[in-house]
Each structure stands twice: as C-alpha cells, then as structure tokens.
Amino acid sequence: MRDSTGVTVPGGSLSALVARLFVAAGIPEQPARTVADALVEADLEGQPSHGVMLVEMYVDRILHGSVSAAATGAVVSDKGAAVVLDAGHALGQLTGDQAIAIAVERARQHGAGIVAVRHGFHFGTARRFAIKAANVDCIGIVMCNTRLLMPAPSGAERAVGNNPIAIAVPTEGPVPIVLDMATSEAAMGKIRIAEKAGEQIPPSWAVRPDGAPTTDPAEAIAGMLLPAGGPKGFGLALVIDLICGLLSGGASGAAVKPLYGDPAVPYDSSHLFIAIDVAHFGDPAVFRAAATATAERIRAGRRAPGVGRLFVPGEPEWCRRECAAGKVHLAPAVAEMLVRLAQELGVSATPLGHDNQASMQEPGHAKA
Image 1 (tube, rainbow, N blue to C red):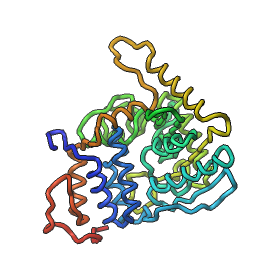
Image 2 (cartoon, rainbow, N blue to C red):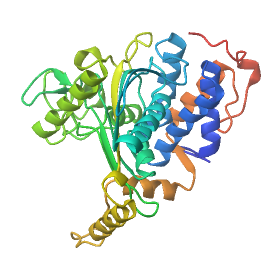
Image 3 (cartoon, rainbow, N blue to C red):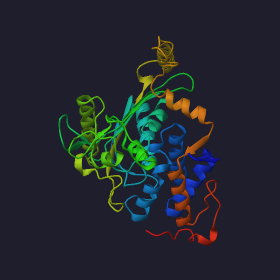
Image 4 (tube, helix red, strand yellow):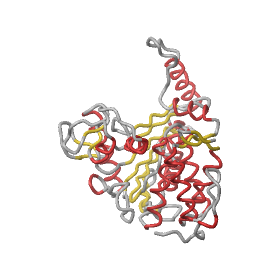
C-alpha cells in the first residue's frame, strides 16, 4: 500500500526481496535470507536505522569486496569459556549468530561463555543476539565498537565510537527485558534517516566539526555525535571499545573504519558476546518469575500526568512489532533505493514495484 509517506509491505515479502538482492550480489541463499530477516525484524521493531535502509551499503561493500560472502568466521583461540572468533569481514548477522551460539554452549559447560570477535562487520541490532541467549535461560550481553564519532567531555575532536551494548535477561512470557542502547544520545542511523527525509534533528544529538551544536543532520554527519549522559556515556563507550578490541586482538579506536566510507576498505569492527547460564546460579524458573514480577511492578507504577503506560527496557520494540502485524512501512527514499537496486542487480522488485525485465541486467552481472 502506497501513500505520500512511503509504502507498506508484508515483512515476509520484503525479506524475500532483500534476500534476492544479497544473492545477486554473491551471498549464498540461506545466509542471505538470515541477514534479510534480521534487517526486516529491526524495521518491524521500529528501528529503521538498523533495517533495510542498510541494504544499499551492504550490497555496495559486498560488490567491492570489503564484506566477505562467507557464512561463518574461524575460531582462532579456544580456551574453554573464552573463545576468539575471526569473522573475516563476513556479514555481522551471520558471525553474530555463530558467536552467541558458541557463547551459550560454553555457558552450559562453564557457567559463562565469552566470545570475542575480530575483523567483524556491522551486525544490526545488538538486542537480537542478547535475546537469543535469554530465550534459552542465559543472560545475554552483546557489545561492539564503531568508528570514532564522539568527543571526550569538552573535547572538539572525535575520540571514541558510539559503541552499543545490549543486555537481556530471561523472563516468563513473550515480552523481553532487554537494554539495547548506543552510547550516543542518538544513533548515526537516525541522523541519516533525518537527512534523507529533509528533517532537522534535536540540538542535543550532535555538534558541528567545530564543536558547536547543530540541528542540521548533514552538519551532524560531518561533525560529532554527543554521548548519552555526557561523561557517563563517554566513559561507557571507551571501556566497550577497549574490551571489544583488546580481548579480540582486533581493531579499536581509529582503526575501526567508517561504515559509510570507502566500500573497498573493511569496516573492521570488534564484537563481544557473553552468555551467563542462570542454571549455574539457581533455578531458572525462579529467576524468570522474579524478573517478570519486577517488570510487572514497574509497569504498574504510578505514572506522571498525561502518561498512559510505563514500559520496561525492550518492551517498546516488542509492542511496535506486535502492532506492525507483520507489515513494514518504508520511507519513500528507502523503497526507491530497493527498487533501483533490484533493477541494477537484475532481480524481481516485488513487492515494491512492477518488474521491468527489459531494463534489468542479467543476475550476477551488476557493476562493482
């Protein structure tokens, strides 16, 4: 369904289209569908900055060789509870699934499993992997570093990335308790969305290259993001950068390259996946019940005037997904991008537009 604000499409059909694009770019079919599903899931959860708007950048990097077509990384160090995985610049959703599975398996044996990942690529939402651990009665902790984006307090140059962290705990029922946050006031993806839409951003999100506040997303992209909570957000971002990069033996600080930079140069992020097996500490059923009771207490708390509902971390995304009823609303620029990519890669643009086979290239013959 199209309107002036974009197009609404079934999530399954959108995922099939995105998977076709990845296959045409050189990714095997099943890994392509896994990544496509993860991107659509982010859109369904109301996080379009981690959704299918990323497809063009992913495809560009695949075609230019900075993202590998491999489905898994290589274990380069295995010391029981501690594992180092070399992702080999494969798509991060794939190596992230591999890493959290190893972390859970080692947690079953040792009480905790820690997998540090080097040479990683963008993996989408960190919550996706943390929830996988929580769904099997483990506490999931996931983090990664990014290119330098934020200044130190009172600084006027980029000193650290807006390095995200997610923590999920097991609960009863379908509603998760999961903290998933970048350490900046706002994610760069949200600023890019504002730029594409021609909208301004709040002055608390970013500063210009000279450190002055801005509401212009283009100036923000050229400038610096601001840490959430000032020095607290900066400090958290710094330690995430250090433990991800140093434990994995991978990149940290300025060694992590721009995600939207030269598509032939690997992003080279470092990731960390931790699983803590609740059963090594007590009865998982008791843990889940206590966590759920805490969430219910928070939801039932006294509300400020005009507030209709209180949420625990992770619940707003769950609610947005429930309300979406399996359908994704795409901004016009994102829908147009997907149709254009389909034409360039020679695949069907269904469900976003009429196929024009005469104008399409043969599959697998897209320009690099």
